[in-house]
Image (cartoon, rainbow, N blue to C red):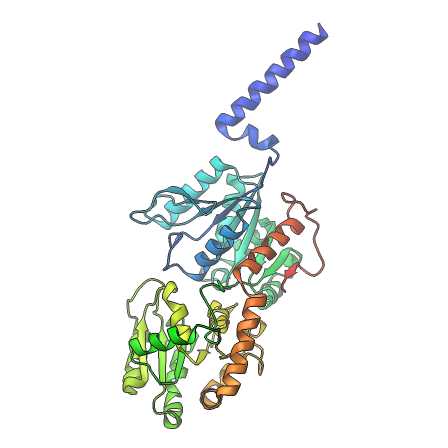
Length: 435
């Protein structure tokens, strides 16, 4: 009799498990990770991946996901664009591109898909509003929030009350600089213990140093094709919005060309990723640039794949930001290309550019006064320019490659996630993953 009762109980248990497979709820309550952990990375849905025209948020998700695919089953959510399949596997990563016409529709489809694939860990990229939605969709999963800037923590995008709730719900908060961690911890000290840091990177295969053997001929040929042969080149690459400070650079450019009449300022970028649309600010920059004739060249929007050659064609890179840059991928890409960087001493930039070693840092309030003198100094001294450029390339290769970023990401997963091999115990240092 006891044996019969036991068999009936086992049959009911198996039946409940099969029902869980159908509705996705009962099984989720008892499921334990089998094999590799399942990691879902949810991008904002603004751009498709892989894509040459995506923002730095999507680019980071793409670069990191491909490099952690051996350690986890990785699913990346991004926007669907014409000609792209809704689901496909590329480089070991499953790309899911929900068909949706609006941001709200994208969120709904993502949450539905998460419920189907039942990941062990969900990484929400730069959209704090999604954290609790994801928690409700996959209650057994860990949810990590990655912030690339302070933009989407501002009152314009989210109320302080709601942001506090979302941060409380996140299992971990991953940030791309120590500066960003300090800023967020200052506003929300209660959650400091769950804030982790992982610097972003670049691809050293694509961003080769202009000083490397065998690069010089290709560099000179590229400059000749673009009418830059024999001319000193200063480059700015990035969005054309006021906080990037390009107006300050143009405002002091006359001082540079008085000393170097053949110098060219190349401005590679636009107001919006993947778009050539001109805003009033962009039109203002073009008017300022016209005063210098052939000494200023606007490239409008430049696909990311074209940037390495433009960096290598330059002699110096400038990052004159006046807003709080959380990190700034352009710094590490320019450095990897062998360029000394003259940048604002602001935000997370000093974590990359070391004053007097691989570039120069200038307080934003003193850009107008100091920027032209530093550019002139570097253009006038090839020995200094090369020494700083080679140190910049070495720093970028050693600390800021995408592979190093991915390795640190896995180390953070293993140290702070119960899903991976680590204990998931908090660390007093906040898990800063640098070096």
